Length: 102
Image (cartoon, rainbow, N blue to C red; front, side, top):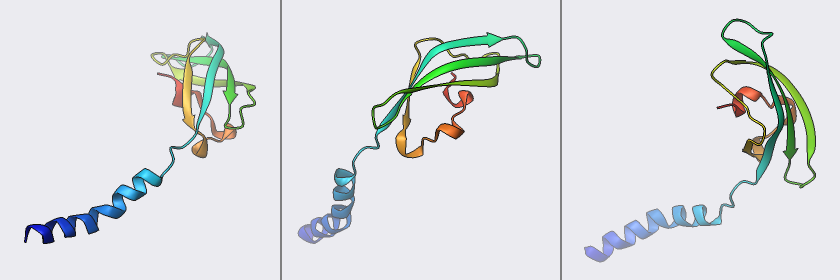
């Protein structure tokens, strides 16, 4: 009876252990804030944020982009902040400052 329970657990949990061990971690793209300005040209309780970002994709060739977005006053971006974004879900056209700001 004892060996039958061990056999059943091995059969049921065996594929689970091999799929986790065989799955490689997703590569991470790095987003660094080079410059960020909080401009008061927005609705009450928010800032218009202009941020220059350096994005290093999986290929390793960094590029810069500047984004403008209205953020609530309590969310900030600071020069030197670095964020990791999974490369398989990263699209430069859909990058939003509100996803990065804390």
